[in-house]
Length: 259
Image (tube, rainbow, N blue to C red; front, side, top):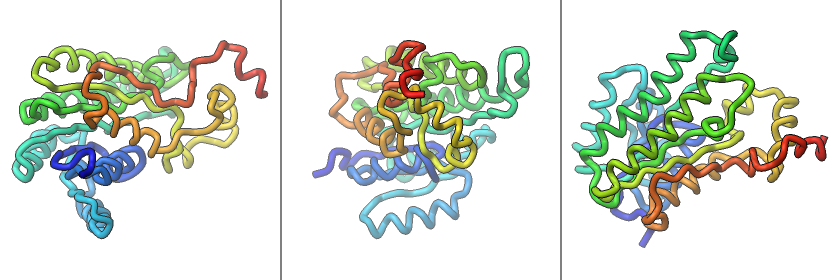
């Protein structure tokens, strides 16, 4: 018997990167996993290929910028599965070219990031909780940037700090119903998007501040999500787990030892 046999999971923005790694890991452990995505046809092909591996994965339409898609997504999943045991709020955006410092950054970008990053977690959770039985688990994908201030990307950091607080609010409010809510806070992660958009010089500099000396992998984040989704964490709620290789542990002089 697998860890998540008989469970139904919903993972937002699950066609690639951390979201896809989470979906695969949950399915490998026995869950029926719905991948909430914009491109349903393409994701259906992905799910079909995974069926040969014995993984139960299905696409469902979701677009965080289209308010009507939220309720339709939850209705589609519950119509097929009846309830939702595991919710992984993975959707999130960043606008590093516009989201700069408080003075120099785009105000429009700042509020769009808040609207989508916080709003998606709030709205999806609000819709799913009524369909979540006792023993249910919500896992929010936040960021180490929600704990540690940065010299830029103020909107992204503020949005993830809000996700952290929302996580703990939900954990407190629904604990007596047997629903847990925790957050995984990735550090620098080697997704295709990150590797494509970050210059090598930046990655080298950043890793000088990471005690474990490497970028995270999507599978590292998925392993943490599996822990929170499973009964292995049945007595843990409201926890913010940074999965960042020790980033932020050192003194300001730490990186100088490796420069």
